[in-house]
Image (cartoon, rainbow, N blue to C red; front, side, top):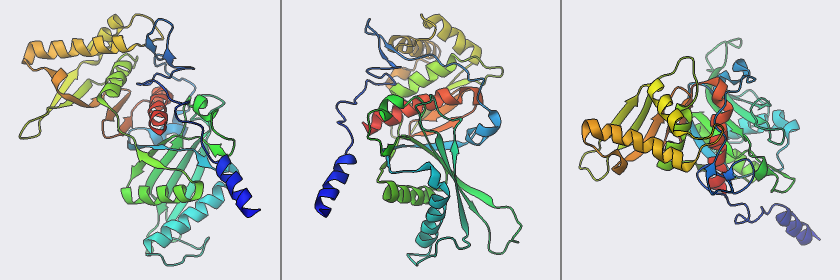
Length: 337
């Protein structure tokens, strides 16, 4: 009887075929909101500012360097148990820091854990609300009334990832994108606890030069009251000494270029991104006689956000926060599949 129950449990926890859920890159799904149109054009919705986003509730996410991870669905995660999870994670961290010594759950610890739901950070009603994890510390020498110091933050989210969540069993919670800010040692501890507790898997999320080019094209076309320069950083290959080239474009010039390239409002195609980048390459070559197309694009920065190929993102504008997270969710889901 026990063997039959175990077999049934394994069957429930088996995810659907990854081939059946595969999607086109970059950012283009083979079906649903994003995808290839009947004319064979890869399209995504153009970014559009979200006036409904409450800046106070999302302020924690802005102007910090977040390290990106993809996360497989969490098994038997329950929103109603967030306080229990916080106590268990706190005890786990304390035990790990004390080299495996047993720590009683609920006692006063140096590291405090807070888990909270962020209903504002989701793309549709089918998306799961984001989950914020915060670690705070208090020095043993400090007074009991002293304020705790936030030492690490991480959050799980899914922005328009509903087509992925629809294809997983009911006992799984889909929050495929995980962003962290703080010491890697805490990231490792939190990740280990979630993996052991919810049978999920974390993986660093890199951003390819192709996806970086999509990001800079989309973000350069956004309308901002105060826009900063659009900057692209390239790494030159096959040199004895590392060499990076920084290419800055005035934000109005970058937006004007994109506006001439984009043919259909609300759509962006791979061809348009290619034309946008080729124009920038041609302008740079005309002045400096360097072919940037032979270099590797490693970082892009705009007034909306910046992104590095190592999977580090800084979001700068609250109105475009959901749009940036939508692209990152797409990348995370693609890596999982």
